[in-house]
Picture (cartoon, rainbow, N blue to C red):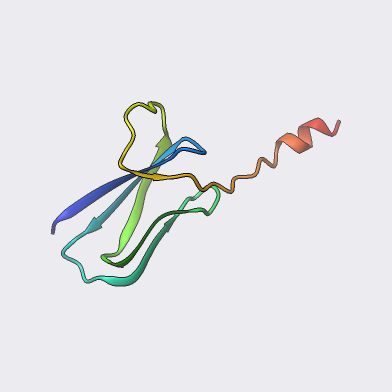
Length: 86
């Protein structure tokens, strides 16, 4: 098993996604990882081994970014409108 780990930083929502895969597994035609918070595509590859999202975390240091980056985010704040309608 040749375990590989990929980091993807989202600059819009300031999150870092940890993605892993076994490069000795058979390849799938389309591999896609989506954000658990907003369902935006974080990682997408064709003809790639199956991958899984290990975890996501707040991106704290913007000076040390991963080479793979994303800007897509669909998060909608559903709490703020409820608080302003007093």
